Length: 225
Ligand SMILES: [Ca+2]
Ligand SMILES: [Ca+2]
Image 1 (cartoon, rainbow, N blue to C red):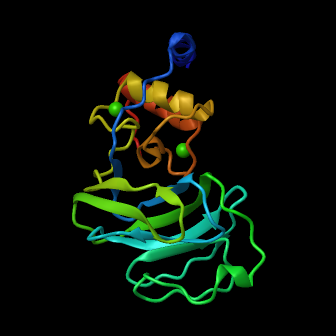
Image 2 (cartoon, rainbow, N blue to C red):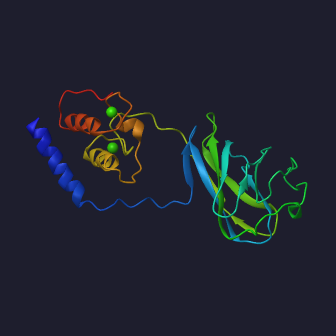
Image 3 (tube, rainbow, N blue to C red):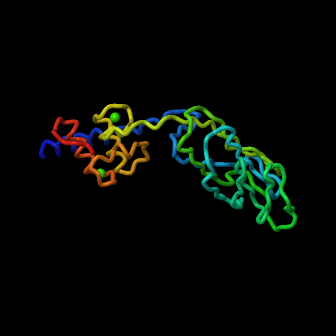
């Protein structure tokens, strides 16, 4: 145990001298089947007091989960058809299934001018039976005079099989995983495979997992669950 503690201390010293790991630069949003993602939708140019934003999934195997407004621009809960639509600043409005028009008039309501900036988020989930591939999810203005942004390229990959201890998903169980878990339990904003990091069977990733993996990489006869 003394050896374990001294190794942990060494690890902490290494950890303390580590600089933050650079995030991998990528334009695509990479997700596995069943994962959720929240798109941020914004206006690069305001204008008028109403707009209808369409999120066109194209052939992407995703399903709508929820939407929420942000900032001064209020978002009405969207109605979804084949695509997903968000109406901003116009309450109690009806959207045509084609997503090309809306009934009612913004002048019916007392609403504020749209302002540039984030107007809301839309969360979707990748279908469980999704086919891996690259898809485009486009944010488009359906009505209104604003300019909208938020389109993404979505890369759907096969979920990697679980490998207990391999917190950084590189196929090996080593000190890099320990450092990553140490950062996670120290509340650093790191990307980590929590299913792999949880090895004690208590559904919590904490120092117990760290110590068990430390014993494992040190050659102790322990089992990572
Ligand atoms: Ca690893
Ligand atoms: Ca645990």
